[in-house]
Length: 70
Image 1: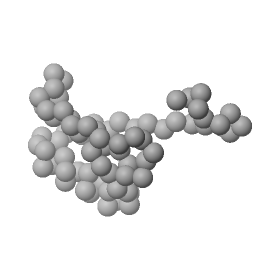
Image 2 (image 1 turned 180 degrees about the vertical axis):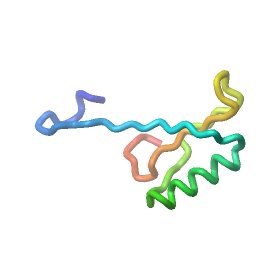
Image 3 (image 1 turned 30 degrees about the horizontal axis):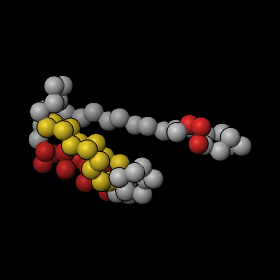
Image 4 (image 1 turned 45 degrees about the horizontal axis):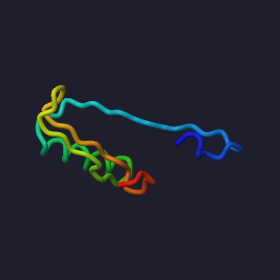
């Protein structure tokens, strides 16, 4: 991926991981709704994992207008 970036520019890749004390799927949806309203962004679920070894549940989101292959 890095070798595909234009070399004539300074490129910075931004990544953000947010961990919150959310205890249910409904609260997760509520959190993303509130975050979207505050930041004026749209998010779609990229991946969902239930009963993981480290988490009760997990949802990975990507910004709706991101170029990530959804």
